[in-house]
Image (cartoon, rainbow, N blue to C red):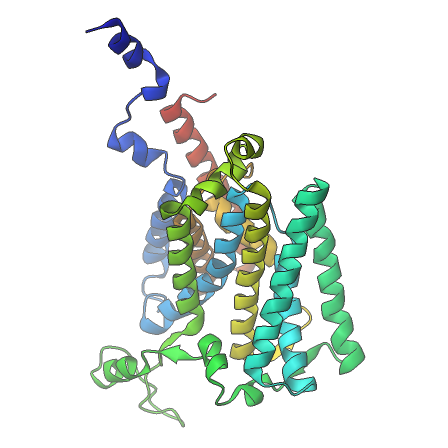
Length: 373
Protein backbone atom coordinates (compact mmCIF):
# COMPACT_ATOMS: atom_id res chain seq x y z
CA UNK A 1 0.00 0.00 0.00
CA UNK A 2 1.43 3.39 -0.98
CA UNK A 3 1.77 6.33 1.40
CA UNK A 4 -1.00 8.12 -0.52
CA UNK A 5 -3.38 5.22 0.04
CA UNK A 6 -2.52 5.07 3.72
CA UNK A 7 -3.16 8.82 4.06
CA UNK A 8 -6.47 8.49 2.24
CA UNK A 9 -7.50 5.62 4.49
CA UNK A 10 -6.82 7.71 7.57
CA UNK A 11 -8.48 10.80 6.15
CA UNK A 12 -11.86 11.42 7.81
CA UNK A 13 -13.12 13.08 4.62
CA UNK A 14 -13.18 9.73 2.83
CA UNK A 15 -14.28 7.67 5.81
CA UNK A 16 -16.71 4.94 4.79
CA UNK A 17 -19.98 4.35 6.63
CA UNK A 18 -21.97 1.16 6.76
CA UNK A 19 -25.58 0.99 5.59
CA UNK A 20 -26.67 0.74 9.24
CA UNK A 21 -24.75 3.88 10.17
CA UNK A 22 -26.27 5.78 7.27
CA UNK A 23 -29.75 4.64 8.30
CA UNK A 24 -29.23 5.67 11.92
CA UNK A 25 -28.31 9.25 11.05
CA UNK A 26 -31.36 9.74 8.84
CA UNK A 27 -33.31 12.77 10.17
CA UNK A 28 -36.60 10.90 10.14
CA UNK A 29 -35.38 8.22 12.57
CA UNK A 30 -37.03 9.88 15.56
CA UNK A 31 -40.28 10.25 13.64
CA UNK A 32 -40.22 6.59 12.65
CA UNK A 33 -39.62 5.46 16.23
CA UNK A 34 -42.28 7.81 17.53
CA UNK A 35 -44.80 6.57 14.96
CA UNK A 36 -44.18 2.93 15.90
CA UNK A 37 -44.50 3.68 19.62
CA UNK A 38 -47.68 5.75 19.20
CA UNK A 39 -49.44 3.18 17.04
CA UNK A 40 -48.39 0.37 19.38
CA UNK A 41 -49.74 2.19 22.43
CA UNK A 42 -53.07 2.98 20.84
CA UNK A 43 -53.44 -0.53 19.42
CA UNK A 44 -53.06 -1.78 22.98
CA UNK A 45 -55.22 0.78 24.78
CA UNK A 46 -57.73 1.79 22.09
CA UNK A 47 -57.67 -1.09 19.64
CA UNK A 48 -61.30 -2.04 20.31
CA UNK A 49 -62.64 1.51 20.51
CA UNK A 50 -63.25 2.00 16.81
CA UNK A 51 -60.07 4.00 16.30
CA UNK A 52 -58.90 1.58 13.61
CA UNK A 53 -62.27 1.16 11.93
CA UNK A 54 -62.76 2.83 8.55
CA UNK A 55 -64.41 5.86 10.13
CA UNK A 56 -61.85 6.08 12.93
CA UNK A 57 -58.91 5.90 10.55
CA UNK A 58 -60.46 8.60 8.37
CA UNK A 59 -60.82 10.84 11.45
CA UNK A 60 -57.18 10.75 12.47
CA UNK A 61 -55.96 10.70 8.88
CA UNK A 62 -57.85 13.93 8.20
CA UNK A 63 -56.44 15.61 11.30
CA UNK A 64 -52.93 14.40 10.44
CA UNK A 65 -53.33 15.73 6.89
CA UNK A 66 -54.06 19.20 8.28
CA UNK A 67 -50.79 19.21 10.19
CA UNK A 68 -48.98 17.61 7.26
CA UNK A 69 -49.84 20.35 4.77
CA UNK A 70 -48.36 23.15 6.86
CA UNK A 71 -45.50 20.95 8.12
CA UNK A 72 -44.15 20.46 4.57
CA UNK A 73 -43.77 24.21 4.07
CA UNK A 74 -42.36 24.72 7.56
CA UNK A 75 -39.90 21.85 7.03
CA UNK A 76 -38.37 23.21 3.84
CA UNK A 77 -38.16 26.69 5.34
CA UNK A 78 -36.48 25.39 8.51
CA UNK A 79 -33.97 23.39 6.51
CA UNK A 80 -33.20 26.66 4.69
CA UNK A 81 -32.42 28.14 8.10
CA UNK A 82 -35.52 30.29 8.67
CA UNK A 83 -38.80 30.29 10.64
CA UNK A 84 -42.28 31.56 9.80
CA UNK A 85 -44.37 32.33 12.86
CA UNK A 86 -47.12 33.90 10.75
CA UNK A 87 -48.39 30.57 9.38
CA UNK A 88 -51.37 30.38 11.76
CA UNK A 89 -52.39 33.97 11.07
CA UNK A 90 -51.91 33.36 7.34
CA UNK A 91 -54.41 30.49 7.58
CA UNK A 92 -56.99 32.72 9.25
CA UNK A 93 -56.33 35.66 6.91
CA UNK A 94 -56.46 33.67 3.66
CA UNK A 95 -59.65 31.87 4.71
CA UNK A 96 -61.28 35.19 5.58
CA UNK A 97 -60.24 36.76 2.26
CA UNK A 98 -61.80 33.85 0.35
CA UNK A 99 -65.04 34.37 2.27
CA UNK A 100 -65.03 38.16 1.74
CA UNK A 101 -64.31 37.85 -1.98
CA UNK A 102 -66.95 35.13 -2.40
CA UNK A 103 -69.80 36.18 -0.10
CA UNK A 104 -69.42 39.94 0.28
CA UNK A 105 -68.03 40.90 -3.13
CA UNK A 106 -69.82 38.00 -4.87
CA UNK A 107 -66.84 36.92 -6.93
CA UNK A 108 -66.85 33.44 -8.47
CA UNK A 109 -65.26 31.04 -5.99
CA UNK A 110 -62.47 30.02 -8.34
CA UNK A 111 -61.55 33.67 -8.82
CA UNK A 112 -61.64 34.32 -5.06
CA UNK A 113 -59.35 31.35 -4.38
CA UNK A 114 -56.83 32.34 -7.04
CA UNK A 115 -56.78 35.98 -5.88
CA UNK A 116 -56.19 34.84 -2.32
CA UNK A 117 -53.30 32.61 -3.35
CA UNK A 118 -51.69 35.49 -5.24
CA UNK A 119 -52.12 37.79 -2.23
CA UNK A 120 -50.76 35.38 0.37
CA UNK A 121 -47.81 34.23 -1.75
CA UNK A 122 -46.94 37.90 -2.25
CA UNK A 123 -47.03 38.38 1.53
CA UNK A 124 -44.74 35.36 1.88
CA UNK A 125 -42.36 36.96 -0.63
CA UNK A 126 -42.47 40.20 1.37
CA UNK A 127 -41.61 38.27 4.53
CA UNK A 128 -38.62 36.70 2.83
CA UNK A 129 -37.51 39.94 1.19
CA UNK A 130 -37.49 41.81 4.50
CA UNK A 131 -35.51 39.01 6.14
CA UNK A 132 -32.80 38.79 3.47
CA UNK A 133 -32.51 42.53 2.86
CA UNK A 134 -32.41 43.69 6.49
CA UNK A 135 -30.66 40.71 8.05
CA UNK A 136 -33.27 40.67 10.81
CA UNK A 137 -34.07 37.27 12.33
CA UNK A 138 -37.02 35.67 10.57
CA UNK A 139 -38.42 35.01 14.04
CA UNK A 140 -38.91 38.76 14.56
CA UNK A 141 -40.15 39.60 11.05
CA UNK A 142 -42.74 36.84 10.93
CA UNK A 143 -43.79 37.50 14.53
CA UNK A 144 -44.69 41.01 13.37
CA UNK A 145 -46.71 39.57 10.48
CA UNK A 146 -48.41 37.18 12.88
CA UNK A 147 -49.99 40.20 14.59
CA UNK A 148 -50.54 42.18 11.38
CA UNK A 149 -52.39 39.39 9.60
CA UNK A 150 -54.39 38.38 12.68
CA UNK A 151 -55.38 42.00 13.18
CA UNK A 152 -56.65 42.29 9.60
CA UNK A 153 -58.43 38.94 9.94
CA UNK A 154 -60.44 40.32 12.87
CA UNK A 155 -60.82 43.90 11.60
CA UNK A 156 -61.96 43.34 8.00
CA UNK A 157 -65.05 41.15 8.63
CA UNK A 158 -66.14 43.41 11.49
CA UNK A 159 -65.99 46.49 9.26
CA UNK A 160 -67.53 44.80 6.23
CA UNK A 161 -70.03 42.34 7.75
CA UNK A 162 -70.06 43.46 11.41
CA UNK A 163 -69.20 39.93 12.53
CA UNK A 164 -66.11 37.75 12.82
CA UNK A 165 -67.53 34.68 11.07
CA UNK A 166 -68.63 34.81 7.45
CA UNK A 167 -70.75 31.91 6.21
CA UNK A 168 -72.34 31.03 2.90
CA UNK A 169 -69.17 29.98 1.10
CA UNK A 170 -70.52 26.45 0.64
CA UNK A 171 -73.59 27.73 -1.22
CA UNK A 172 -71.47 29.93 -3.47
CA UNK A 173 -69.06 27.04 -4.12
CA UNK A 174 -71.80 24.61 -5.15
CA UNK A 175 -70.97 23.36 -8.63
CA UNK A 176 -67.65 25.19 -8.84
CA UNK A 177 -65.09 22.74 -10.24
CA UNK A 178 -62.12 24.63 -8.83
CA UNK A 179 -63.58 24.67 -5.32
CA UNK A 180 -64.05 20.90 -5.60
CA UNK A 181 -60.25 20.57 -5.82
CA UNK A 182 -60.13 21.67 -2.19
CA UNK A 183 -63.46 20.57 -0.72
CA UNK A 184 -64.50 17.50 -2.64
CA UNK A 185 -63.82 13.78 -2.22
CA UNK A 186 -62.29 11.17 -4.50
CA UNK A 187 -62.93 7.42 -4.92
CA UNK A 188 -66.56 7.83 -3.81
CA UNK A 189 -67.67 4.98 -6.10
CA UNK A 190 -65.04 2.66 -4.65
CA UNK A 191 -66.16 3.37 -1.08
CA UNK A 192 -69.81 2.88 -2.07
CA UNK A 193 -68.86 -0.53 -3.47
CA UNK A 194 -67.02 -1.42 -0.24
CA UNK A 195 -70.14 -0.46 1.71
CA UNK A 196 -72.35 -2.64 -0.49
CA UNK A 197 -69.87 -5.52 -0.17
CA UNK A 198 -69.83 -5.26 3.62
CA UNK A 199 -66.14 -4.36 3.76
CA UNK A 200 -66.88 -1.12 5.60
CA UNK A 201 -69.88 -0.15 7.72
CA UNK A 202 -72.92 1.66 6.35
CA UNK A 203 -75.50 3.86 8.04
CA UNK A 204 -78.46 1.77 9.20
CA UNK A 205 -81.10 4.46 9.64
CA UNK A 206 -81.96 8.02 8.75
CA UNK A 207 -81.66 9.83 5.43
CA UNK A 208 -78.25 8.28 4.82
CA UNK A 209 -79.32 4.68 5.42
CA UNK A 210 -77.34 2.29 3.24
CA UNK A 211 -74.58 4.79 2.51
CA UNK A 212 -71.01 3.99 3.63
CA UNK A 213 -69.80 5.71 6.81
CA UNK A 214 -66.78 6.86 4.78
CA UNK A 215 -67.91 8.34 1.48
CA UNK A 216 -64.48 8.94 -0.01
CA UNK A 217 -61.04 10.41 0.57
CA UNK A 218 -61.19 14.18 1.26
CA UNK A 219 -59.14 16.45 -0.95
CA UNK A 220 -57.39 17.64 2.20
CA UNK A 221 -55.67 14.24 2.42
CA UNK A 222 -54.93 14.27 -1.31
CA UNK A 223 -53.25 17.67 -1.00
CA UNK A 224 -51.23 16.49 2.00
CA UNK A 225 -49.93 13.42 0.17
CA UNK A 226 -49.19 15.42 -2.99
CA UNK A 227 -47.26 18.10 -1.09
CA UNK A 228 -45.23 15.50 0.79
CA UNK A 229 -44.29 13.73 -2.45
CA UNK A 230 -43.42 16.96 -4.27
CA UNK A 231 -41.50 18.34 -1.28
CA UNK A 232 -39.54 15.11 -0.87
CA UNK A 233 -38.61 14.97 -4.56
CA UNK A 234 -37.52 18.62 -4.59
CA UNK A 235 -35.42 18.18 -1.47
CA UNK A 236 -33.72 14.91 -2.39
CA UNK A 237 -33.71 14.71 -6.19
CA UNK A 238 -33.04 18.25 -7.45
CA UNK A 239 -30.28 20.83 -7.44
CA UNK A 240 -32.67 23.24 -5.75
CA UNK A 241 -32.95 20.78 -2.87
CA UNK A 242 -29.18 20.91 -2.45
CA UNK A 243 -29.42 24.69 -2.43
CA UNK A 244 -32.00 24.53 0.38
CA UNK A 245 -29.64 22.43 2.52
CA UNK A 246 -26.70 24.69 1.68
CA UNK A 247 -28.61 27.89 2.47
CA UNK A 248 -29.52 26.56 5.92
CA UNK A 249 -26.22 24.86 6.65
CA UNK A 250 -23.76 27.68 5.95
CA UNK A 251 -25.26 30.55 3.98
CA UNK A 252 -21.99 32.41 3.45
CA UNK A 253 -20.12 29.34 2.23
CA UNK A 254 -23.08 28.56 -0.05
CA UNK A 255 -22.80 32.04 -1.59
CA UNK A 256 -19.12 31.47 -2.29
CA UNK A 257 -19.94 28.45 -4.46
CA UNK A 258 -22.70 30.22 -6.36
CA UNK A 259 -25.86 29.25 -4.47
CA UNK A 260 -28.51 32.03 -4.75
CA UNK A 261 -29.19 31.96 -1.02
CA UNK A 262 -31.48 35.00 -0.91
CA UNK A 263 -33.65 33.69 -3.72
CA UNK A 264 -33.89 30.26 -2.10
CA UNK A 265 -35.00 31.73 1.23
CA UNK A 266 -37.61 34.01 -0.38
CA UNK A 267 -39.02 31.10 -2.40
CA UNK A 268 -39.29 29.02 0.76
CA UNK A 269 -41.25 31.78 2.50
CA UNK A 270 -43.55 31.87 -0.54
CA UNK A 271 -43.98 28.10 -0.44
CA UNK A 272 -44.83 28.22 3.26
CA UNK A 273 -47.52 30.81 2.51
CA UNK A 274 -48.80 28.59 -0.31
CA UNK A 275 -49.13 25.60 2.04
CA UNK A 276 -50.95 27.72 4.64
CA UNK A 277 -53.40 28.90 1.97
CA UNK A 278 -54.03 25.34 0.78
CA UNK A 279 -54.88 24.42 4.37
CA UNK A 280 -57.17 27.45 4.75
CA UNK A 281 -58.96 26.83 1.44
CA UNK A 282 -59.65 23.20 2.32
CA UNK A 283 -60.92 24.31 5.72
CA UNK A 284 -63.23 26.97 4.28
CA UNK A 285 -64.64 24.54 1.74
CA UNK A 286 -65.20 21.92 4.45
CA UNK A 287 -67.02 24.20 6.90
CA UNK A 288 -68.54 26.57 4.35
CA UNK A 289 -67.40 29.56 6.39
CA UNK A 290 -64.38 31.51 7.59
CA UNK A 291 -63.69 32.57 11.19
CA UNK A 292 -61.32 35.15 12.61
CA UNK A 293 -59.97 32.59 15.09
CA UNK A 294 -58.98 29.99 12.50
CA UNK A 295 -55.34 28.90 12.50
CA UNK A 296 -54.51 29.87 16.08
CA UNK A 297 -51.24 28.23 17.24
CA UNK A 298 -50.86 26.35 13.94
CA UNK A 299 -47.39 27.84 13.44
CA UNK A 300 -46.15 26.12 16.59
CA UNK A 301 -47.87 22.85 15.70
CA UNK A 302 -46.14 22.89 12.31
CA UNK A 303 -42.74 23.53 13.90
CA UNK A 304 -43.32 20.78 16.47
CA UNK A 305 -44.21 18.28 13.72
CA UNK A 306 -41.05 19.21 11.81
CA UNK A 307 -38.84 18.91 14.90
CA UNK A 308 -40.39 15.54 15.79
CA UNK A 309 -39.53 14.55 12.22
CA UNK A 310 -35.84 15.19 12.89
CA UNK A 311 -35.17 18.69 11.52
CA UNK A 312 -32.68 20.92 13.32
CA UNK A 313 -33.75 24.35 14.52
CA UNK A 314 -30.40 25.67 13.29
CA UNK A 315 -31.14 24.67 9.68
CA UNK A 316 -29.33 22.55 7.11
CA UNK A 317 -30.75 19.22 8.27
CA UNK A 318 -34.18 17.65 7.99
CA UNK A 319 -36.56 15.53 5.96
CA UNK A 320 -40.01 16.05 4.45
CA UNK A 321 -40.83 12.41 5.19
CA UNK A 322 -39.83 13.00 8.81
CA UNK A 323 -42.08 16.08 8.99
CA UNK A 324 -44.95 14.01 7.55
CA UNK A 325 -44.39 11.36 10.24
CA UNK A 326 -44.34 14.09 12.88
CA UNK A 327 -47.69 15.34 11.58
CA UNK A 328 -49.05 11.79 11.58
CA UNK A 329 -48.01 11.39 15.22
CA UNK A 330 -49.71 14.69 16.00
CA UNK A 331 -53.01 13.60 14.45
CA UNK A 332 -52.99 10.07 15.85
CA UNK A 333 -52.28 11.26 19.40
CA UNK A 334 -54.94 13.98 19.26
CA UNK A 335 -57.66 11.61 18.08
CA UNK A 336 -56.31 8.53 19.86
CA UNK A 337 -56.68 10.08 23.32
CA UNK A 338 -60.35 10.67 22.55
CA UNK A 339 -60.85 7.06 21.46
CA UNK A 340 -58.94 5.82 24.51
CA UNK A 341 -61.19 7.85 26.81
CA UNK A 342 -58.28 9.91 28.14
CA UNK A 343 -58.82 13.49 29.28
CA UNK A 344 -58.23 15.66 26.20
CA UNK A 345 -56.16 18.19 28.16
CA UNK A 346 -53.41 15.55 28.40
CA UNK A 347 -52.88 15.81 24.64
CA UNK A 348 -50.26 18.54 25.08
CA UNK A 349 -48.50 16.51 27.77
CA UNK A 350 -48.36 13.44 25.56
CA UNK A 351 -47.15 15.51 22.61
CA UNK A 352 -44.44 17.18 24.69
CA UNK A 353 -43.11 13.80 25.80
CA UNK A 354 -42.98 12.55 22.21
CA UNK A 355 -41.27 15.76 21.06
CA UNK A 356 -38.62 15.49 23.78
CA UNK A 357 -38.06 11.78 23.09
CA UNK A 358 -37.70 12.29 19.33
CA UNK A 359 -35.24 15.18 19.68
CA UNK A 360 -33.08 13.39 22.26
CA UNK A 361 -33.07 10.16 20.23
CA UNK A 362 -32.11 11.91 17.00
CA UNK A 363 -29.39 13.97 18.68
CA UNK A 364 -27.92 11.09 20.68
CA UNK A 365 -27.71 8.61 17.81
CA UNK A 366 -26.36 11.22 15.40
CA UNK A 367 -23.58 12.08 17.87
CA UNK A 368 -22.67 8.43 18.33
CA UNK A 369 -22.47 7.75 14.61
CA UNK A 370 -20.78 10.97 13.49
CA UNK A 371 -18.55 11.48 16.53
CA UNK A 372 -19.98 14.94 17.23
CA UNK A 373 -19.68 16.41 20.70
